[in-house]
Image (tube, rainbow, N blue to C red; front, side, top):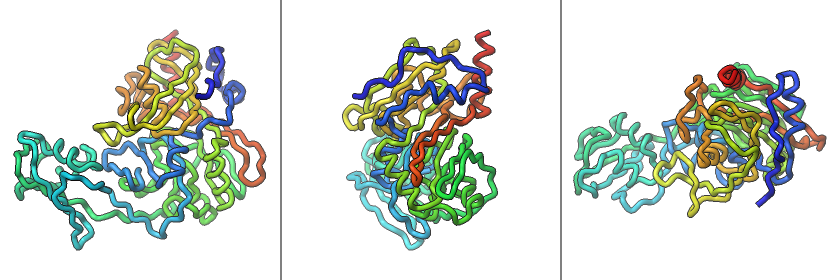
Length: 409
């Protein structure tokens, strides 16, 4: 395990005119640090987004984000049109039959096996890759029949009862230009550095067919984006959650895209986060070293998973303590989905505003986790010139910190 890069000094929040300069000076940089919560993980796998949308569970297809905090994308060339099946199913012994219909939909037939079990519980258990939320959506849409009749999620299933589930046909996703304002920090012929606002999905996925960063980039850049990741992810080298704000680097040329992807694999792109967490952290800095894997019961969530999880290490440093809250800076040694959120929740300090791993925020409406990708450092993919970017605190974070300061006065 790598040594915690932080020292024992508590760095107090400084006035806004000094904050950006001091943020980089006070952040220890290491060659091994992960780029983001999912960069390392998804470079070797098929592209996944992790939007914490309640619409889909997609373990083997492109996911929408929200819930993730952050994965880089693979370099496989995509087809001109991207078909995304919202329900990718694994083989499962509880399924009697699984057939495709002429319209492209699928019908799955099952038989009740546990007398008195709720329909939604039965289906989410019997069909591995359907979350309970997705199952409820199918039931509410009238796509689940019990003994030939439309059923409710709460209906109790008896042993031997036939159950059929109709899965809609795949969705055709296309990206198109949309005039959406972008906060561009830097641009040249090869790269673009943008400050993504909270609430924006990075690229199209089921449930997010417009209004994404990609749609905005197509309007801003036209055809001056790398095409390595296909038509629904032009220029996208890495991403951050829908409800995480902060910095992203975009590739405008294929050589730049390839070089940035390789730099991420080598942990040569450094990103640091600011987070407001619940509770007062007593130690000035610390490390959470705990494997992360898919939650045993809720496939849309991640969890500390000693048996099946992958190594995950998060270093954190206290920036300022408030009454009942703490502002911290995080550096990731590994890149796992939702790593900061899962790790901080595991030590009793969930990210404030996080309704998946915490209880939201009682002070204000944060629209998701109070997590911001503050700084980005890397060598220019073509010129190799060292580059550093620091974003200003977004409005939502500045407001939250102001509320915390006033409470302490």
